[in-house]
Amino acid sequence: MSSVAVYNDSGASSFCVECTAETLTRYSFIISTISADDIINGSLTRDNFVGIVFPGGRDTPYHEKLKGKGNAAIRKFVEDGGWYLGFCAGSYYGAAHIQFAKGDPTMEIEAERELAFYPGTAIGPVFPGYSYLDNSGERVVTMVTGQTTARVYYNGGCEFTPDNLNATTFKELWRYAKDADNGVERVAAVGMTVGRGRVVLCGTHPEVSAHQVDNVQHRREVIEEMKVAEKERFVVLDSIFNFLQN
Image (tube, rainbow, N blue to C red; front, side):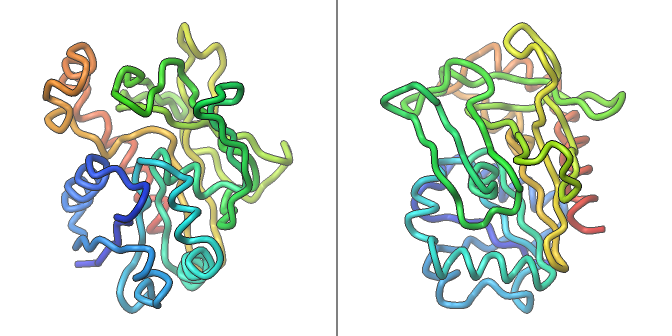
């Protein structure tokens, strides 16, 4: 079986790390967590791992610990044939620019990021109500690709807007379906080829299962809808891993 590193350091949500690890084992990966120091000191190599996942959490601490040498090591890993998968905060982190909570003095972030796998801006939250303090902004959203739809967990994720509308260096994998809070189908997940490797950035949380949110910290209506839609998240995950590994 192939080994995958899951980033677990400042900024990474322990909940998202656990969800990511559990989901990856269902795809027969061997999971190891990896820290910023591990990456900086040379542990992230193709001899050790086939891919690395950056989970949900907060993007700014990722940048603070990995800027410079750490990010250079991640890019080299991908260029050498590894893959990078970012969910939510990890997807913001993989874009060239981020714009988060514009106009909110307590949360706003506008910044450049060094990995710059995606040639554009990760803009979020796509849907209103997000809070760092609790899960009040969580919801189940519908993703769409072609005629296929899938409902997955969402909490503060981004959409992707390219710097060049005619760019061909990335592929749109999924969009957010139109709804009352989202009048257009915004881009929810993108894929890139970087050197000999692959990258997927996904603004939603298909790695989160119904049983993982089935507790008092989460909204009851979200829990019940996720139970109904549980199998649908694997449609998204299957497409992601198909892109990353082929």
